[in-house]
Amino acid sequence: MKKLPQVLIVEDEPAIAELIAVNLRHNGFAPVWAEDGISAQREMDAALPDLILLDWMLPGGSSGLNLARKWRADARSKHVPILMLTARGDEPDKIAGLDAGADDYITKPFSTQELLARIRAVLRRRSPEQVGAQVQVGDLRLDPATYRVSFGEEQLKLGPTEFKLLSHLMHNPERVHSRSQLLDKVWGDHVFIEERTVDVHIKRLREALGGGASMVETVRGAGYRLTVGAA
Ligand code: CA
Image 1 (tube, rainbow, N blue to C red):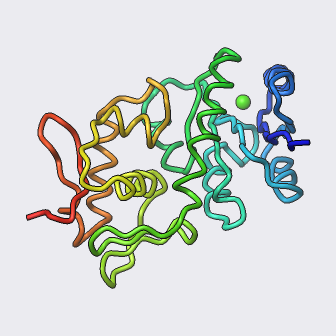
Image 2: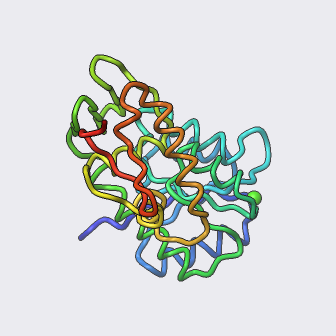
């Protein structure tokens, strides 16, 4: 029998956690509930889930943001997809969550259908590029296994979102990507993020690329392209 996907629910409100757990169980997932950062870490140590549903606002010292950062920094857990649950509406928090390594977020209150669609999208999107082989475009090299990016001899430091963005561009070089295509492929199939968020991360990516910055081209009126043939 196929193993059910394990979902770790990190949520301090029992009523919400229970509702999510019931719906997940009903739809072919195996949920585990942790009510705070400490018990969440205990569950992570015991067995890595296939996906983490992480509440942004948790009591005590470990906010969802800190947990996401911690798990992303840990070699053992850095590839486990994280879907943030947030009650907040403002853009900086969402960008902070994605920067901390969350794969996507969903804003409370959400419907069961919306939650399931997000979970499936994150699980679907996660595999191919994340655990794939090393990819090289020009002097730029990216290794998903070690999370390393280099340009020539130079090792580069990229945030998680810039890494995902670059990975997608490198898997599809010389192709023009519109902002909405990048949102869909890198951030997820949802409408909550504004297109200018892409510009912010493209800017950060260029800064991180140093000598390779000019490989990320702006195609006026169309979007962005990664190219080896930059002037
Ligand atoms: Ca909460």
